[in-house]
Image 1 (cartoon, one colour):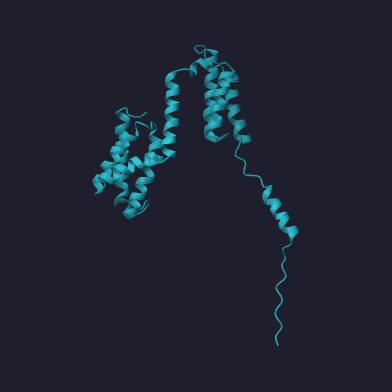
Image 2 (cartoon, rainbow, N blue to C red):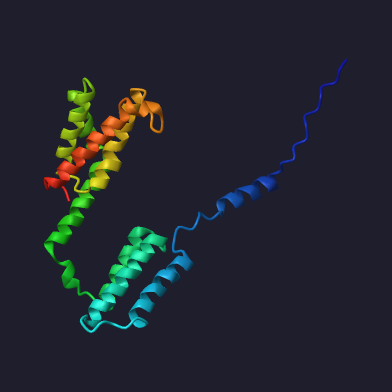
Amino acid sequence: MSTPSSPLPSNTSPTSNTNRHRRRRFSLPPWKGAKPIPLAISILIGILFRFAIPKPHQLSTKAWQLLAIFLTTISGLIIGSLPVGAWAFLCLTLTVVTKTLTFAAFTNEVIWLIVASFFFSRGFIKTGLGDRVALCFVSWLGKNTLGLSYGLALSEAAISLAIPSTTARAGGIFLPIIKSLAVTADSHPKDDSAKKLGAYLVQSQLQEMLLVYCRGLSR
């Protein structure tokens, strides 16, 4: 009679499992904060421009200082010293702390109206309301290729009243819709089939975007 085979020995033990669990538990997420070298470079650009380069006689000290902060801000945005929002708020705080700009400059109603419109447009995109409006126009007029372009054009004109940013409308709403429509029609980017539908829709949407911008419906 054959004896039953014994199970294979396991190399894992409760102690090793506990150690693995601890290693997973205490693993730190990747650092997403300031990058020391780009941060030092951007700050050094502003300091050198402010104190090493002679100020023109036609400019005031505050104007020259504001230009130095502006160069620091632009260089930090380019080389990525901090995330864009954090770096912008940091440089804005610097202008107020150094009294280069008084806080009264930020009490203009137009500035806060622009900020509120961008918050509103972000919620418009996150909730998917913009997608639903665009898809409604496409479903009404999308019987053929020309109807699709008219539907996208009308939805662009309607949504621009709520989303002032052209980039936000294009990247957050219309590009995904155009891409899905083109793929459904077997028109793929970076391929010979792109000229079937995708290239036409992108070109027509680009022209409509420029028309909406010129009509003053968006900023």
